Image (tube, rainbow, N blue to C red; front, side, top):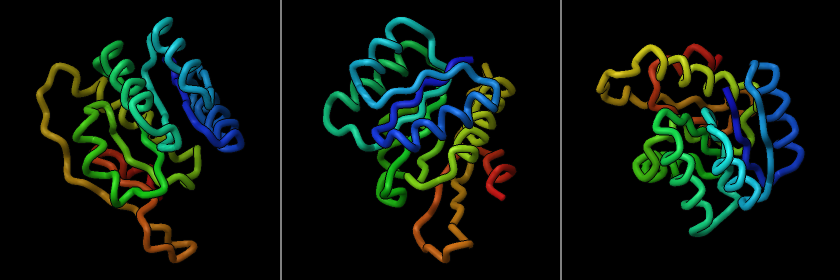
Amino acid sequence: MHCLIVDTQPGRLDLSMIAFLEAGLQVTGTGNLQVAEACLRRSLVDVLVIDKGPKGPSHARLLRLAETRNSQLVTMFLTPTVERDSEPVPRAYPSVHCVLGANVNPNLVAKLALASLAEKTVCSGLDAEPFLTRVQFDTETGDKAPLFQSARANADRFAA
């Protein structure tokens, strides 16, 4: 399985690449939308991790290209505004399984992506409705902003 990580923060990109490699996925990482587009055109990507940093039509074009190339794509969307993006982003892009806070631990992102991949494998061929939304808050810092929001049933297993 191949994971493409498009992240404008180099430090987080490195940590995310390590987390997905340790999870057993082949990983390509970049902060450049043109490189990401070339990767999507040349190889099949199973997991796309993308941050909200890239703005405008290129960002939307990249997500559409990824979804066109692989109808079973799992996308993890990183954003500093989870509460604002949790409704419109998954509605616009069906492959978005989780809308995650920009400061979420990359190991958690990898676990949630694997949970979504497992669900795709188990539920392939079924026309299942999305599950109830779960929100996890940061209890360590007392931050009231959600760390992530997911519409997937088994996301709760990895939140703790």
